[in-house]
Image 1 (cartoon, helix red, strand yellow):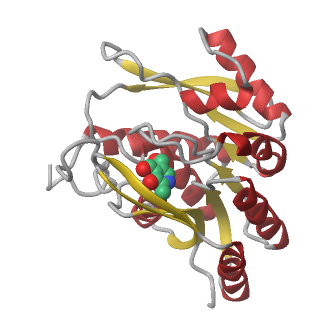
Image 2 (cartoon, protein in one colour; image 1 turned 60 degrees about the vertical axis):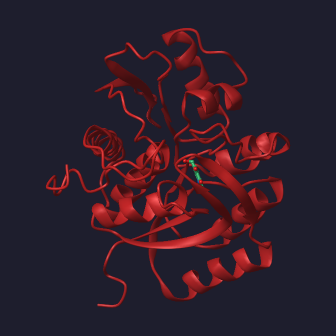
Length: 272
Ligand code: PXL
């Protein structure tokens, strides 16, 4: 039957080394058995040492990408990644609202693991007021939580307060990722706030490795893939946490520095 196979969409930047951005999302969709389509918002040149050039796509090109997918495919869940500036955020919001692409996972990509800024500071407010209200799930990392909620996180109570603040901005569910700042830590703890108001912590083993590029992209992509298949929200988040943790825990040797995670770890560990 036409379009019966689950299809997910990433609205993101292309990362030339394949470790993050759209490529990490598509790897994840594939690994989770979901067909992956993409709307490219920007094109990034980089490798495991860092990002060296970046070009935003013209908005009329992005409009055409959305229109072509809406005309033909049945996208059941979508996610956003790098959106670069206010103009791109507003264009993506306009297109997503006109389309019928299912739940939206917003990964508010601000900064890379190398410390390159991927969203202009002047766009933070557009993110808060235009995109976050559309988010079925918002997946900020520790740095992004503090930028979006405009507060410094010192303890668990701060994290819970920040998650509530982001839900008040319109995000239905929030996955607020914990700090990785301490090399001695044995676990990573994320705070999850569901649309029902239920809040809980999810803990995973901490792996000391440089093979961590694209972890946030892959987490949000895995949630998207699960939502496209109809997995309930809490389970989708738990599956995604475990998927990324397994991928970090079984590194592949690609690149010299901050290399990619192993999206295939859960299926086939023969390369480890
Ligand atoms: O992982 C964040 C990210 C998102 N999108 C693009 C990237 C990166 C990090 O390198 O290049 C396009």
